[in-house]
Image 1 (cartoon, rainbow, N blue to C red):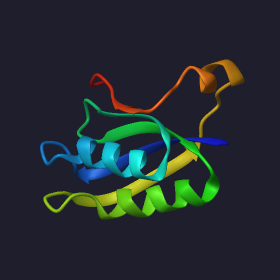
Image 2: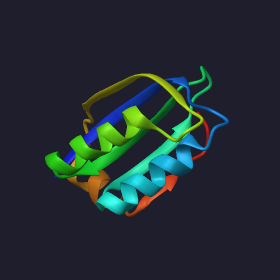
Image 3: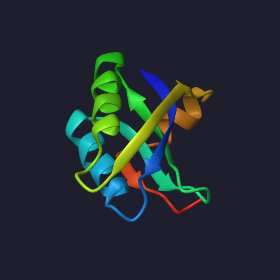
Amino acid sequence: MTAVRFTVRGAVQGVGYRAFAQREAAALGLRGWVRNRWDGAVEGVAIGGEEKLAAFRHALERGPAAARVERVEMAPAAMDREELAGISGFRIALNG
């Protein structure tokens, strides 16, 4: 299992982006969370196999119909086994 932090920039708030990301992640069997950021971006953590994370990235780049994605950034998330085990499902988290 791999854990990544992702940030999506563009017109991605107020367009159903978090719900879109949650549906896509759940369909792929990923665990993690997604939330709006104060600066207008959307961020989160996704945990899963490399192929599924690659498919998730492609979905994030596409986004829902009303979104205008400019850039998706993904980087390894430094999480220990305990933190990884504590995340189940894929949820929409409180805004940050």
